[in-house]
Image 1: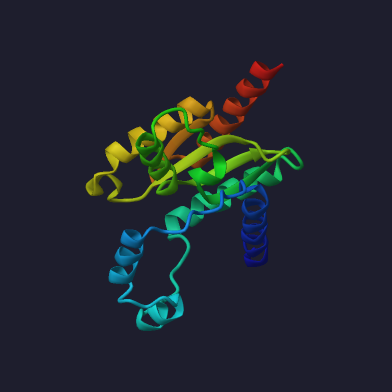
Image 2: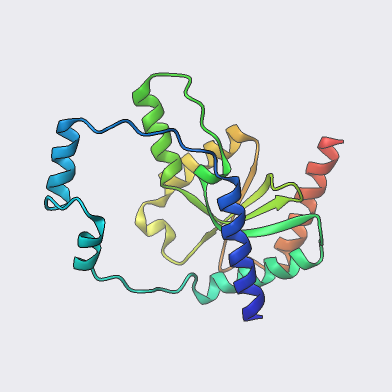
Length: 192
């Protein structure tokens, strides 16, 4: 089982790497930006100096409740060979392309919404297109002011035409997996 999870994580990394849009070349930072950078890095130009001063520790990728959901989704994926793939912790900026249709400041603000958000689980079709995103709300999710962030995320998914659903540790997984089948069947019927 561990090998399968490890293989899935490697496949996720490869899929994200291969589907990332090419980045635009960055402009050379202005002197004022360079001074801000120098102030935040203590004048060090070499990131390795910054990292050597920091303490970096490994941490678990998911808790026991989230692991339970992942295992259920991977079992569901095995029942749908060659049709769908379950990915974990996918950034919205990897899923969606944001086009600049307004001012630069509005685009920068929208870009921030994308860069700072992810979904816990994403189901993609055989061609790699996102079809269903699942947000897992851990204990204490709403104690950290997540309501507004959830609203923004829901708006992004609605505009992109991708279904977003939310679950928590009280969700009955067998029924939820049936609901996934129903949502995807409805989606396929809409495409036909």
